[in-house]
Length: 304
Length: 251
Ligand SMILES: Cc1cc2nc3c(=O)[nH]c(=O)nc-3n(C[C@H](O)[C@H](O)[C@H](O)COP(=O)(O)OP(=O)(O)OC[C@H]3O[C@@H](n4cnc5c(N)ncnc54)[C@H](O)[C@@H]3O)c2cc1C
Ligand SMILES: Cc1cc2nc3c(=O)[nH]c(=O)nc-3n(C[C@H](O)[C@H](O)[C@H](O)COP(=O)(O)O)c2cc1C
Ligand code: FES
View 1 (cartoon, helix red, strand yellow):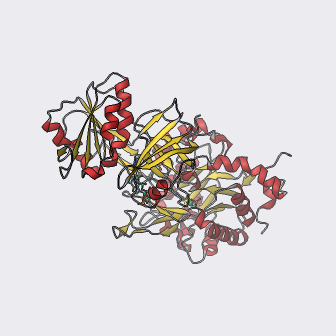
View 2 (spheres, rainbow over the protein chains, first blue to last red):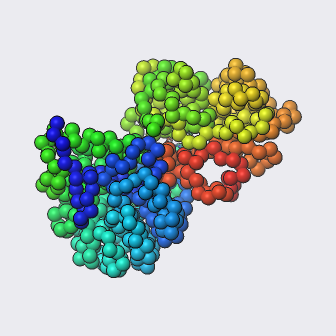
């Protein structure tokens, strides 16, 4: 078999392959390095980070769904300063590829302060602005579901960020292209989609919501067709590179997401049910490319 | 790096009571390092795995024993896995019980299905020369599945308490301790939260308890299982499921 070219480039950041564990499903990577050599990954998007440390929402914060799960973690993280002082050094020991920093917030000031700090970290190659977390009140998705507030936060962050800025979009909107365009007009270098869909499960025996926070973010293979559709719309309409995310579980899914328009692909829930999911995807990609007559992955980006 | 995900063959799977089953599986046990660790069982047709404590295991035979209550669709599906069925499990998850720094007469306090992980713990403690005593609590005699006999087989004295008094001492495990003046110098407990709370707040000896929560992954990746402890935020699946009694905050 000939050597397959899996390299992709996100706004000038070269990745050895397009496979990236999605934020919130891989921690800061070093925990997963107990299970395999994570240096084989294209990048890692680390856990959504805010200015202050957050415990997140009360337990239970996960619910089973058909072909997926609902989570209501609510951005548990140790806060930006602790992330820089403790988590990134541990991550650097076991991971030598470019890192994607997933940043969230409750005010424009908070987004700006966190991005300004993380921008200075050498191994951080891309900032992923999470304006789409459905699990917190008055932050996250509140920014990402309104075109003008997306524009405002992106414009302010852009002033302090030297690294490529990717905006992570929420699917809980009527017109994702409008939100994507607002981000791009305000200076976003790329887009990442989708975050989770707002969902709910009820325990019919106890007559109560399964997760303590009532609602949560739904993701997993069930959302894959929605993600492919949205990536396809946004990739063709917004004119910037797209990181495709949502339900990706196999090398075939990666290829499909790239054909839809994704330059790189994030894998979330699949890591939670199979700790080796990303490893297996990276290892299977050359075979799948071979079977489909693909010589370089960069050839297929957005061909549909 | 030991692989934590493997396929295991069901060697036997039989019903013990109206709700409790015991399954023996064969496969790679290398990732298991302590009693009180758990496995995360993939259920055909379900997205999330189901966490189940390792009741007993043997590296020599490559065997894992699981005790489980059928309480919902996932555990119902487990009860339908026949001999020879291949089960995808993550193994050796969690910290497990400590066996080194405990006293010489540890009490093993279990409630209902929570007695499961105490069996292998008893075996490990006996091996290190300790004299553990097991006290097993059930609601009623129909819920008891013969754990007391398994304990006696491995040389651990065992008592039973039932809430309705239909077997052993009437009441809770603490009533057994009082009735027979049992003196332990450490306790290891697993069972329903109200029981664990009562033990942690009433027993004066040092001890540790194994707690549960719904889990997303079971190996530390999603933080769906976090608890606030006196030593900061911890993941039940990774830093737990076993916590020292002083660590836990009972609200
Ligand atoms: C570390 C740990 C060890 C455990 N050990 C055992 C054991 O040895 N034997 C045993 O019978 N049970 C054990 N449990 C509980 C067991 O995981 C649940 O009873 C089981 O997941 C229920 O699944 P179900 O599909 O039958 O029920 P359902 O109610 O249909 O489950 C739906 C969802 O809720 C979750 N869930 C429901 N109850 C619990 C619970 N008590 N704890 C965690 N998740 C739950 C399930 O995993 C699933 O995602 C343990 C739980 C944990 C966290
Ligand atoms: C447990 C969990 C935690 C998550 N935490 C974050 C987060 O902190 N920041 C973020 O941008 N997205 C977060 N997400 C969303 C994922 O990164 C991803 O966008 C979404 O789950 C869709 O992908 P999937 O279907 O592959 O899971 C989380 C998802 C899950 C399941
Ligand atoms: S269940 Fe995922 S971190 Fe504990």
